[in-house]
Amino acid sequence: MSSPAPARPPRLRLAALFLAAIGSAIPLSAANPTPGRVNFAKYQQVAASVHNSTYIADFAVNGTAGNFASWRTGNNPGPHWLEITYPRRITLASAHTHSGLFLSENPVQLWQNFRIQYHDGNGWIDIPGSTVTGNTNPEVNVIFDAPATSDRFRLIGGDNGSRALREIALFPPNPDEDGDEQGHPAGTGVTLNLAARRPATASSIRNDNFARHAVDGYVDDASRWLCEGDAGETLEIDLIGAETIGSAHLYSGQGADGTNPARNFALDYRDGDEWLPIPGAAFAENSSPALEIPFTTPVTTTRVRYRTTTGNFARVRQLLLFPPREGGHPLGRDVTIGPPPAGSWETHGDSDFIVRCDISEDRRLRQHSRPAATRSRRHMDVAFLPAISGRLVELQLGPPAQHRFPLHGPGPHLQPDAVGEFQFRPRRPAGPDRQHPQRPPVQFPSGLPRRLQRARPIQPVRPIAGSRQPGHGG
Image 1: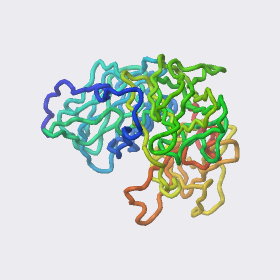
Image 2 (image 1 turned 60 degrees about the horizontal axis):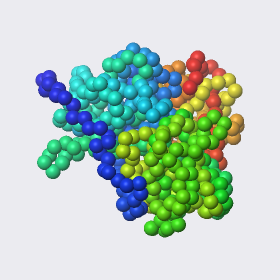
Image 3 (image 1 turned 60 degrees about the vertical axis):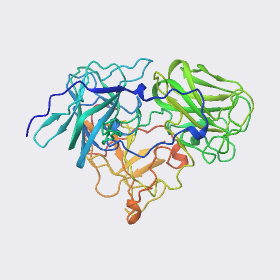
Image 4 (image 1 turned 180 degrees about the vertical axis):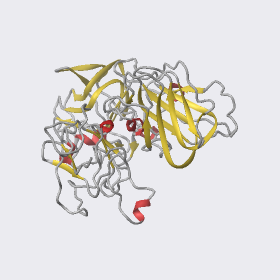
């Protein structure tokens, strides 16, 4: 096979170039719904040169760019690589990388020098135009000189030491009117909202307008949080891990025009044992149903809360939290204007999910005796990562002995390089519905039964007797 054409300087465009200048508030009608999937890396099979602790490669393609779900190399010598494998050959023309950790306003562990390669059946070939050097930006858009076709692609970097990749997105060709590749806007096919489907609790709930509705991604009266109307009511979002937040979006009110929006409120963040006000996030007499809230100073925290400062029902339809970015994030990012899908995650299982666990002695996997055909809200079919091998019969979630997910059929096994990381896919139904193009996506954890949503993060588990137990946890 002939050698590729010499690589020219990469056509890189920073994410900020894709953002239009916007005001602090826009009407709901101007907010764009999330487009259909074009990110060909999302949920695909991945492998990596190395991973640190429980921050495995799968987190780089789970569709969410955040510190908690990131692939990390640890302090190991390079080169580091992440390979994505497809069941058939596909053609790609551009990529986005979301690298580094936002542990403060300035990200650390950035990928500074890297390139993207494809496999031609004999070896790895650099894609012309994909080489990046001296990068200092957490978001990079790479447009290839020419499309590349293969069933294997990889990101490879020569930097030594710790590197973190929060997400990678790969895209098919998207030419402009002149036939030139134009790539895709920043954030396409990736959730940047750090509050998306995170555990949410409230000081009070009016009727069935639960707190979890405020973080499910849908702006609609059928999916919002309402409180009882007292001053000082709160909506608290648990980010699970430490994140640095630079701005927020608030969608509130009722009806198509968003009448009666949240008027008097403030956002606070948790600092140790106390709540502190977020600079620049207090409002009096707000009249906008779709509000962009740039913080005066970014904050690093594990919890954020919305707090009413006068008596009102709040009517919070969505509260989104974003990492720092020059120019902020446009309203309409990571939300759908409309009601959530009527389908159930139990009926339509078409996504993979990572469950983080620790290996310990105080939890164990228990044999489940119900027949394989049994399925209910507390019993669902799951399939583990192919790399895991030592028979596991059940994954236990929540408080001890309360919520368990049985494994039907041949049990997977456990090996040291898969410590604490489990991936599962609810079984899809048989018949025509399996191929239905409008099947709503499975969502975890917001799609779980309500009692499981209230459970704290995953409890530790351990392998059954006789299987190997790693010497380190997640």
